[in-house]
Amino acid sequence: MIRPPAVAGRFYPADPQTLSRQIEAFCDSGAQRTSAIGCVVPHAGYMYSGHVAGAVYSALKIPSRCILLGPRHYPQGQPLAILTEGSFSTPLGNARIDAALARELAQACLSLREDSVAHEREHSLEVQLPFLQKIAGNFSFVPVVLGTDRYGVLDDLGKAIARVIAAQAEPVLIIASSDMNHYESDTVTRVKDERAIARILALDPRGLYDTVRNEEISMCGYAAATAMLVAARELGAKEAKLIRYATSGDISGDRDQVVGYAGIAIE
Image (cartoon, rainbow, N blue to C red; front, side, top):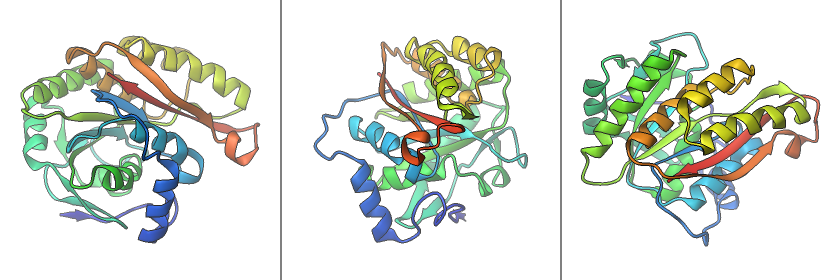
């Protein structure tokens, strides 16, 4: 199975050379890199959030295996959808699914379902892949998109991820793909995002979940971030660092309706 790109030419350049140059511009090749258990990375069009994503990937040692968690923006497909074989195609080539790791995770979390429909149009994982291809080179990954907001399910998923990673001989990075608050003023968005970010920095998955819901923060990937935090805590995470924060208004100049972007590393 080769899953073709769904948003090349819209969220990021379809031309490989242009895409490669853009990623190089967003990343700092001389940055000091540290190991991490997980991270939060935005998934908007590169024009708006690529500099935040690039800052995260520049700050981290990217291992050869990753688990990508993201929201399912469309109603089609299973609420916890995984793919356990094949690859995702981007203009930079094919990114291979880690079949062995994916099967282990599917066995560890029985709520996960093999489902290509949920992944077919979804951009939240796809936009991460060119960065990983450019920086990590020959890597493999496990794709999971989430259409559920039940805390118990997210807690189970996070604990299953932790068990699977703990059993591996080499490191595995958990990437939670999420933008922050959507389509409110820059002032309101920054206040709301600060509240959600504070819970991530406190390594508090339940707190993040409750804050997003109670404060009406339209953080699209909060389920992914919650599951990632559960896993990170199970794996012994000690601290989280905000690497970069921005809003779309910083690029467009429109401060009336913005989207927030946070890049966070969990160590």
